[in-house]
Image (cartoon, rainbow, N blue to C red; front, side, top):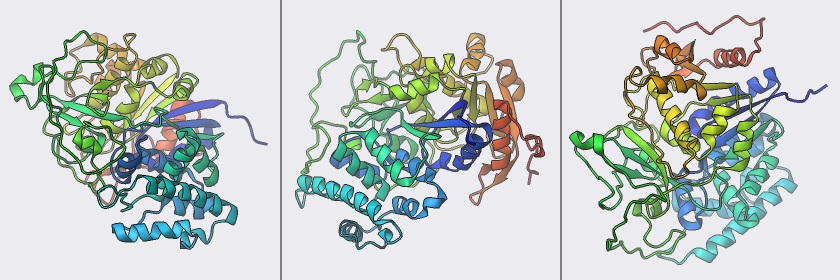
Length: 491
């Protein structure tokens, strides 16, 4: 007899990194009789998502698609393989393979039942029609290079129905994702593109998520009296960024000559060049550091001006009704922050769930070079506090990434409103965690067993992590030997 799930869990995450923990969360659902909702940002503008955004506009769907496909059960392997497939890296070969999806000659269709295959083909047919309406060779074209089939399907379904949520629902239904147990919620529900910017401590401004998280040249906004660009390190303490929308700051008019483009696409005239460029090629494994630590994250419109988009009402309602919130592994500033800085999210977290659990990354990346565990905690808390401000125009800031934990006693006491537990791997190559300082802030540190991956970076032991989360939530399988404090021997 199936019992009605009694607990509700929220997971904040991005795409690729957190996909490695989906099996952990699935087991957590089963063992603790829970439902789970993933809240995922739509600010991704890299890879094949960037080409779709350039031509059609709309949300960044890469991370949403990645999680939906990861949730497709193994019993539906043909559909999982289909939506996980990418077209060839050659644009000519990719275009040719897309045509096989239209005429049903693709071998990917063979194991898929005819009713599903025909439904999928109808979505691609509509997408193809939309492409033909927009291309103007040789200047305006669509590049199928390395396109994820799942991304093409979500875009076609969104354009057909006029609804991003309907597109998500359709892929989930075809894939057999049990939405009564597991839901994927975009942080923002919109048919428009939403970009983020990062302000660094040296005054540099980088526009676009892909430029922030992957090595690229700085893409600063045009200089004005309100923007400090490329400040020296001595000036970083007084670096300023675009004033919040609705402020009383006087704006000065400057004549800016925008570069001309011999193409027509979905971006508005005068948009920042870095936001309208296709970014099909980038490396997720490169670790080239940023020129300075990240000080602030905010949303921007196509012209680089700060904006405060409204969060998905379903996401806010889910947080308010939840028993636990989990901040999953992934990029701190481009996977977690874009969801946390949305207005009202922090208030919902502070006043809703009993448990707020941060799963610390097993290694540092381009966004968090030099961070310790408490730096991650402070960054998450600052995002939540900014979003919970009663002033809708309050500046959304992430505090100096490496302040003394003892420097602000009131802030330390407020941390537990947003984080009650920190799960981490105790290893020399993982971020250092000072449990005494954590305890002083009212946060419980949970040390776990770790293993090294093929790339030398630390990974969580799935069994240990599942057990630790179960213990925090109040249910533990007593038949299993505790692995919470089991640590890998140091090399």
